[in-house]
Amino acid sequence: MEKDVETFYDNVAENYSDHDDRVCDKITEHFIIDNLPKKTLKILDAGGGTGRFSEPLLKKEHKVVLTELSAEMLNKAKEKLGSYNNVEFVKNSVTNMIEFKDETFDVVLMINAILDYCGDYDKAMQEAHRILKRGGLLIATVNNRFLYCKSHELKEGNFDLFRENIKTGNRYIVWGGQEKGHISHEFTLDELKNALEKNQFNIKKLLGIFNLMDKYEMDEVKNKEDFIKLQIEFAEKEEYINNSQDFFFVAEK
Ligand SMILES: C[S@@+](CC[C@H](N)C(=O)[O-])C[C@H]1O[C@@H](n2cnc3c(N)ncnc32)[C@H](O)[C@@H]1O
Image (tube, rainbow, N blue to C red; front, side, top):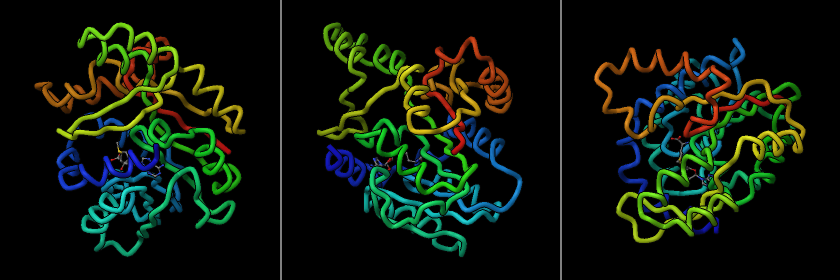
């Protein structure tokens, strides 16, 4: 399973940074920065891809370690961020971060479905908990099961598959013109809350950061800057969390 994800991202790495300007990622970046303690931090960008979220943190002079399962994604991150002297790169899996001692980081980021893709989100949360300092923060986004299963399988008329995916949360995904994809575990809100509590995290914030429209259609909005402000305002509205494609959370050790 891990091998499928690694191969998939090795294959899409070449053009992955084309995504860097997405409106949805600007919204995510706002909430990451907004929730960081106001001091210089040691941050792990776990499953950091080609460095989309590491870069603004490096510019703010935080110390960042970017980890990746995919060697090709990691190479692209090195090309993009190599000129910064406050960054390190490590190839590993979020389910086994043996390279890092207990209580090393102030913040661990797992942005854009790392917990969904890693194959064992409990293990990934346990590892994040182990390497965070006491009071440290796990900041992450995960996929909302209902919206991801609904938007993809229903259009194809695969109603039995929809029922099955809703039941298990495990969905096969493929994009970017690739022949083979990988499994993603999509979360319900209760499942996410229970997993964080079971793994000894205290949930500080849980937001519906893409509750106004499909996150992949946000780039088509005419007045992007005003839209981003509106989405930031609505993300905080608790009653609409379940309308959001991704859930954003801040959880404290
Ligand atoms: C959707 S991309 C997000 C990348 C980056 N966080 C961002 O938002 O731009 C998912 C990334 O997770 C990485 N990944 C998947 N499973 C992983 C694992 N078990 N350990 C570390 N990285 C993993 C993939 O290689 C891929 O680069």
